[in-house]
Length: 222
Length: 154
Image (cartoon, rainbow over all chains, first blue to last red; front, side, top):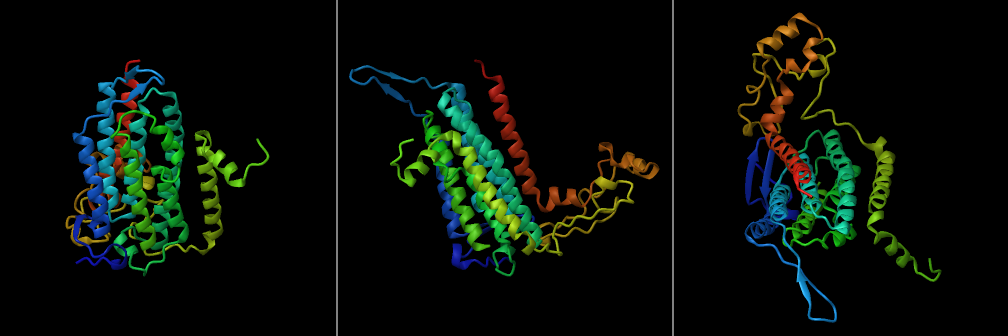
């Protein structure tokens, strides 16, 4: 019944999951992203947090930082939610559904870093939060323009080439994902990674990387 | 600022400050929006919409008239009808109280008590149900963050 017309982008479809009009698909490309996100989500679930050590320079003294159990539990919850949102975003077959998963990734990323008390981390998280909120406008605007310009949201229809997706819709989508996933704005991430709590912090990076790879596929294929 | 800096150094100094992040993103957004405004005349509205919206000011349910026939079968357009075999049967109803409100008054049908089902609900709950699930998940996560920050002891 289905026929994914983008053999040159992601290869043939291996497996199709139907949710009404939203038909998620696993091509070699999206399946690879899915497996990567799945591995990292499992790692987050099973692993224990790192314990940072400060070494006093020029002496033998060092002190370990305390891992707050409440914070740890909350961070793990947010990291798992972020992983699940990433799993959804990389396989979904619908533009609006993709934007929803992308904004969920943005919110969970804020959640991972929001609970720290370190001033630098909170500063960066605040700026990041503003950008992520701002980015929902071009993100959903892009999906809205896709719908208005082509009459449909399903990637199965849009990827065919028969539909002319406006260039500005693609630009909005990329801009939105840039804001949500913070992919090119690494300065905020450099500050954020001062926070302790690997591997939960690393979920921020993994999710934004996968999100950006996925939106690249979408924009090229449309 | 030292005078002998190259242009790349100056740019990297600006973008390496977290405080400039929002302004940088806003600048990028403004550039894209201006490009969008320029290209706006070339974008045509596609008439054959999958999720069409119709307004009927004469309806007693006016702004919240979601289409569809109460107690009847509602035709719902779907991208893949074979995936939604029960589209049109799920929420195309009014409660008896809402029906009474809509029949006897002209604008009480617009209040929240008159929650009519209809085509929009069919789309939200049936053909695009996963969207609704993800939306509520976003809300859940956001409330989770807010409640954790509010309840943590300082």
